[in-house]
Length: 72
Image (cartoon, rainbow, N blue to C red):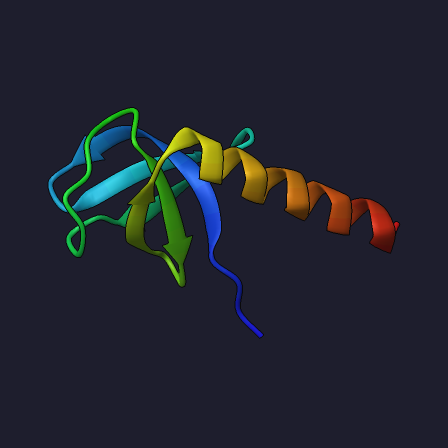
């Protein structure tokens, strides 16, 4: 199963975006969605698939943290 996770765009270079996932920095394809630095985004399989507001991104991050705590 693959899961899309929320992150924050910290840099854009052409169609590539550097995305911060709670300190984990990853390059993702940004050509599918119009994004700018500072946007909260949902990334799946190395591609940004949508932007989202801070409230939704924070809720998703909290849920992922809860799941991680259950698996330890």
